[in-house]
Length: 365
Image (cartoon, rainbow, N blue to C red; front, side, top):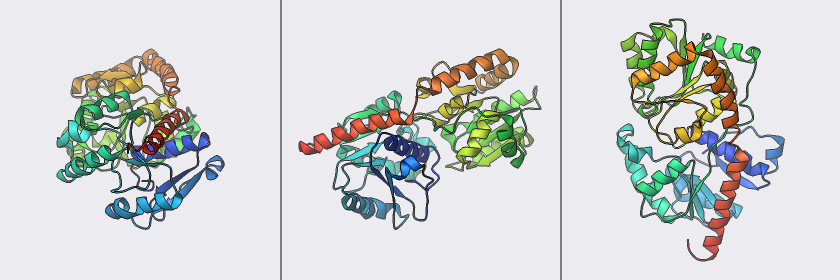
């Protein structure tokens, strides 16, 4: 739901809304109480913002979302992960990834219980399921074999704000956080799945030969997020690492553009939106060779084994030692990023919505 600063999830919802608006679709979006989204002139006529009366998740599922769908006479209700208990219209459920099944140790017992019960129930009732990549689609089919709803694929994209910019736009953001160039950038919540502890360990080895290079980490706290700080303390690299916490889109654009490369060593991703954002800014990318990331990065990234600290360190070394390689990856990055767009994702969503409505009219939902 918009307004909760859920980083990638919220960015995806916002991008999909903009894509639907660009395709001439009238859409309503539930938002947090007191949240006022920034809206372009083109979107203002297409998107209706519906503030919910409460931030309580259970009330939202039991009462608020069904009521809004009914009052607004929605043709389709599109939700992320957890569907409401009842709905006056067909429901399409987005499942960004199933990391909670593939790597349950990365989640609290509460989250595992929530997903195990509510997600399974919602998927069995869904008229359609929306995945962000072919890998995510296949994982849903693997872990939920009893779910028979059709699965559609609609990848993420970078907004128009993500593009190459000059030094004058970058400098203020770097100065605010005492960040100097050159630096590598990592973007992702501070949770074990993002594998930032191994990145810190690899960076500590890299720093022995390159003490002038910094590492910037953008990400909010998450389950077991304190392990990253322990790793930093253990390897004594706190002076070379800068934390940004939550970053706005404008901040991210500057940080991507100023970086030597985005380093994205996540163990598991349903898509990996920062990879596309960095590529849209024309920056080299180091990414894991697992899950959806090879699909998203194409030939525009150095792919590494995320569990191999030396492999991560070697990739950092290669980009610093080989400017020609960095320049070639930058060129490929812009080409790869252009393959993703929110209007194309919106087209896939519209196909899912029409199929859900047709299925409902035929009495199959």
